[in-house]
Amino acid sequence: MQDDYISVALGLPELMILKQQELKTHFEVTVRYRRDETDCPRCGQSSNKVHDSKKQSKQDRRLRDKPVFLNLIKRRFRCLWCGKVWTEPDAVFGSRRRSSQRFREYLGQEALHQTVKRTAAKELVGEGLVRRCVIEAISKMLEVKGSGGNPEFMGLDEFSVSRRLYHTAICDLVNGEVMEVVEGQGSQKVQAYLETFPDPERVKAVAMDMHEPFREAVQMCLPRAKVVADKFHVIRHVNGIMDAVRARLQGSRKRKTGELFKRRYSLLKAVEKLHGWEKMKLNHLFQLYPDLRKAWKLKESFRAWYRGTNREQAEAGLKSIEAAISQENVPEFGELRYILSEWREELLNYFDYRITNGFVEGKNNRIKTLKRMAYGYRNMANFRLRILATNYKGTGAISHLLT
Image (tube, rainbow, N blue to C red; front, side, top):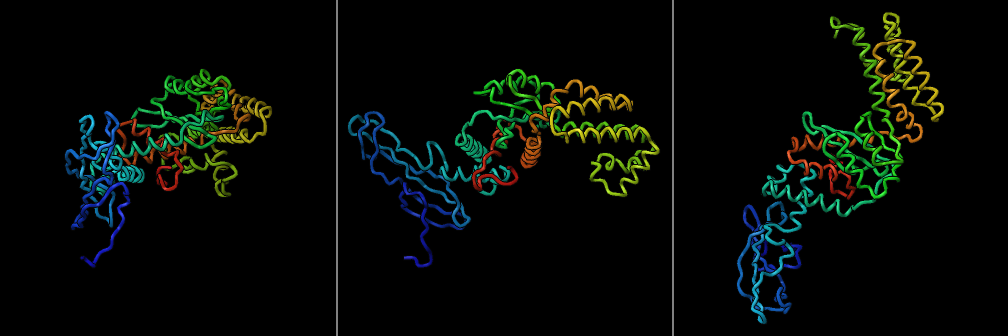
């Protein structure tokens, strides 16, 4: 009897250990199921007559940082009533599987924290097995979560999958979750998903950037939902116009040496965040370039407009901005006049439902992290499952890189 080891429970009570051996690189354990009889699948009678058996090697979770290989004595039984021969059920591993169920669950969880390739190399398994385990793990998460119906407030935004290829993330702004990922950035796929809503009239508002196909899909499928032009997209657009004015006045010869180029970030900064020395620099530029002063005042007036308290005040403020754009006559702001006309109702809807796409933009950043971790995805179905898995809030299930 050896006196230099301790026994460790295998953790699989369904199995009986017949033999165990610790080698230099791994553990080998010979096991069989404890049951002595099973029911015939043809006639239902119970039989303990073993027809034959064979040994199958299956992998289990590591023990003391060594792989564990279980040599399962797989038996076939013969029915004494009808003569039927069948293989005993394999609940621990599964039909035609070469690894235990708990090991596959472990692989699926591990591959959510790191790349498939790294997980496969660490656990000495094939990458194909790890990919299948990840899909199984995510699918179970989504099944457990189920569907809670459509929310009151939603957000739509596209994200880049590869060069010139975009998909659309549809998010629940109430619970902070990605509801679905659809191909492309057009209206057809988004509309097809919105048509599946059990209660479309429940949706009150949908935030989006100023993308016409999204507006068409929402107006077609969600009759009572108001479209809200995302505040941060609008402000970013206004800042882009401000920068275009600066670039025109700067010219190409003084691109990276002139004072205009040096103050490009200060021009876009909110007035309340400017330092004293920045205000002095900008005042000097405004004296040299009157158009720059006009553009900056228009930019700040638009930011101040978003601080309005109600829709009535916002409508009056928007008319004042339009009048200022016509009076100042800065060419670049002609584009903004078009936006104020075509998206007027959507801009004003913000003062009814103060929702933004901030959460959706945050999710898009995490989606980019997913892509970088995997060096891109060729299988878009797997990519979709990875994105939807970021909703899961189970303890320790998904790493901070994915949520």
